[in-house]
Image 1 (cartoon, helix red, strand yellow):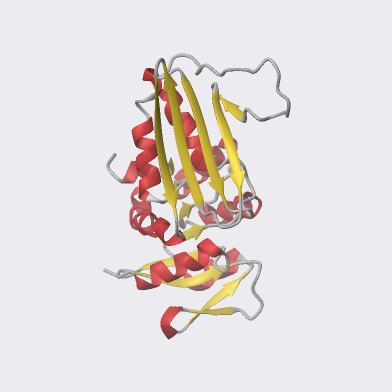
Image 2: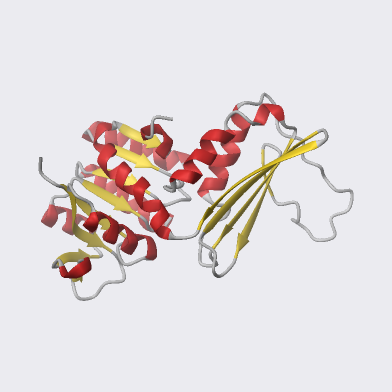
Length: 265
């Protein structure tokens, strides 16, 4: 069987360069091109001196030149949205790790990908431990009345809260018929100190140098609390999930949100 041909959108970024290293080491797949606005010489070297691949800011040009099976997107919403529409229109499968994408945009991608016979896997988090945390949280909401989520990321993260925090909140509320109880202080000395709100779940975002990703759920009921957390201490923790997504995305029709859907959970 021929190797899966992969193009990385955002190849110069921190996540993109980590994906480049991981895919280059993986048997049965190869990186054949990259897309990034921060490139000038038209090529980028593969790890360990394996040669060079073309890189351009023009995603249609790179797809036409390299004929990939899968495009992996780790950029930001502003860059991802127009690029992914072009990718699906060209009949290429997509793995999306970019967060901050709207439901209406994903609906548009779903319609387009079905029409073009492509699969799109969107994951708010590729760390398998974080995915397991989201899966575990689904049945917990009905047993507790109070819920807070604390998420911490590096200071350069554009969106807040994180896509994983939103996914965790949505998982917690699945088993409930009503919102969580959110205590409202009679006097809030500093506005916003109780955090954002999703169905009564308070969400707190921390942005700090030295952090990669941290997610913690704190649940409360009469006489007890339950805390669950996951820490990402290196971007390489995302790579087993990315590799799995690349291998599985061709089996999908339309948009599938959540890595757990291809993990058998």
